[in-house]
Length: 314
Ligand code: SF4
Image (cartoon, protein in one colour):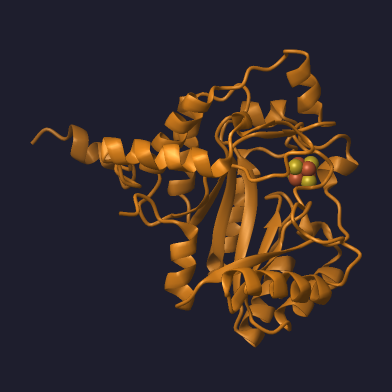
């Protein structure tokens, strides 16, 4: 029994077959890095792992990665995933040209745009809507929030607060695009209370997908310096698994869970997944959910004026 809505099952339901994301890197940067060092956990690769050099054309990146994935998983349909840095930080015309190039690649059925919530406006969303309508492509907007705790957002030098995220979500919703939110459940300073509040905030908004990451600290990042000098404390693996379990129980039952742990290259990792492999952690998590008989959304009892039901004295 699936105790949470896995992303792979969600895609199968929509497209009637297995669909894989193909990462694409663009020659773009991030406004938060231009202003200084960026987020304290930013390693400089802009999270553009597993993808090809940004100098390679979008078409070539997609065609070559598609060939590999199609062979490995016998997949026939794909989503072009613009994943590195802040994709909507590109000038509008460049952005349109890159997305259009992806939409024209055979077997691309969806386009996913990863960006910061303070780097989106109607002009970019209109471009995506136009391409979506013209080529029958589904659009997903992936916004990095990381945590609802705006004190933590400040500490990690995120460069935006909770308000910009809420604004981005409400701006995007009328377009009918799927909205995905990236979240880290073990940022230094965050507690279980922050994890639950983050689950409640995304559930109260028209967000469909949550992509969860365990904190990855690349060597060379500001956070790595702090970690090396004992200036931050990280929660244990057991605590992370507890947080993850509660998060899944608190989010709406119709939401989709894209990922539970980070999957990043070990070479540059100063800290990642407590030295364990993500699939072992996933198995531990599944066992815990099984043992407690928990399913996604089983604690989502706080929306729609819940106190009226809870406290009303007839
Ligand atoms: S938003 Fe992403 S690319 Fe920009 S500084 Fe933060 S982690 Fe790095």
